[in-house]
Length: 488
Image 1: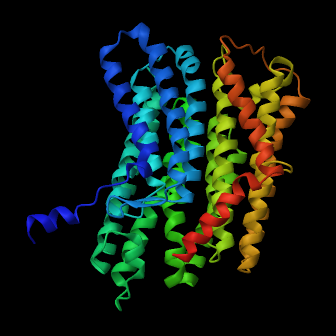
Image 2 (image 1 turned 180 degrees about the vertical axis):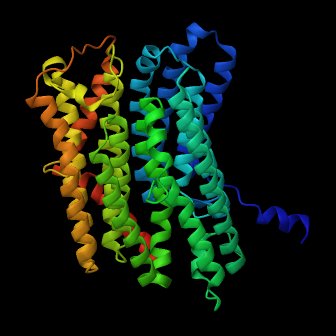
Image 3 (image 1 turned 180 degrees about the horizontal axis):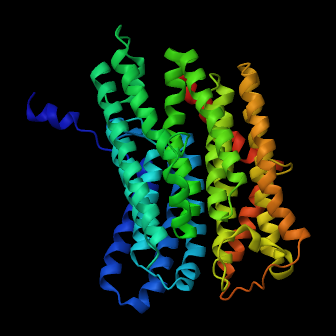
């Protein structure tokens, strides 16, 4: 090949398809530079303002990418409708995290400028994970998200629980990435390609490497999403992390780690439909039951919500077990709405932690409606949404998963899902009863409430109802995105 042919083979990427990620990347490096250069008293104002500006610009730039779908960087990055919808939710939740983080860290006397650029780098990794079939890109972005979470979890100054949670997350998170990497190697050996679409399209006769690679790859992601029995890091990390970071992990983190599984779902089912259905179905059933049973006996609210997150991983996996396109649609919808309601629940807790003598004990919610009626109402809405009470998004999400299970006649899994939801009533309703039917445990007062915090809670609460009453707001995008994935 001469120089002319070589130059002709070089692809000039359409950066318009990568524009939101590029904006977040530039924002992260600007924040990193300013954290080194600015004096401490300026960082508290400049860093969050620039972070918010960068995320808003990235959000606006998504409308440019919608008009120009397709692959870039030699097929390693895919700009499609699924990626677009997921990135909109990830950016919106990142903006709400900024609204709560400043007052939270100030109340804990634990401000670090590193928080803002690590949040941006973690968000960048999550956005790239939402748009790739390439094994190397998935590995790099998975590392970027994971390292960001390890550091963000340990950001509470002088907190042993924070450092312990970060260390456990680091150990099991490193194991998950190692297993996913081994899986990627075996899949590459099988098909000689790094693209998951090409790997599962390959018609080799010996499936041993593919099966082995797929098992390792999916176990790696099962650890990340907190599926039983790979969930042991999750309660300690959620409890130890700064609560706005926990909200980010429970929402954006869940989205980031589930989307590669969503993308691989129709590819795997074409070859191993029955094995996939049974394996994922059993893991989903165990995860639902275990998460809800253990949540019943928790006394710390963050650990309770952590085990609730484990249980919801089970509900989502139940949809993943379905081998028809309706399962994919249900999973994507549930992921998006779970990000909204879980983030809202943790944001309420982050505000309560700023009250003097607050210890995150469930008994402290007694009579909360007398002290902070708007927080009590918001928390009640999120609890009912997580339980699945109409007319909240949780009800629609669980109904869609149940319908998807009925399409594949997975009645045993549907029964376990109903049983698990009934079990979860014990702790969700208990919190509502404490807030509205019990006397005050202690006097709770908050200082330094910002308009951004109140506005964020209002938006999340409205979305909790609006996406249920008007599901077409996201369904019009989820439907075509799912059908496109299955058509591939």
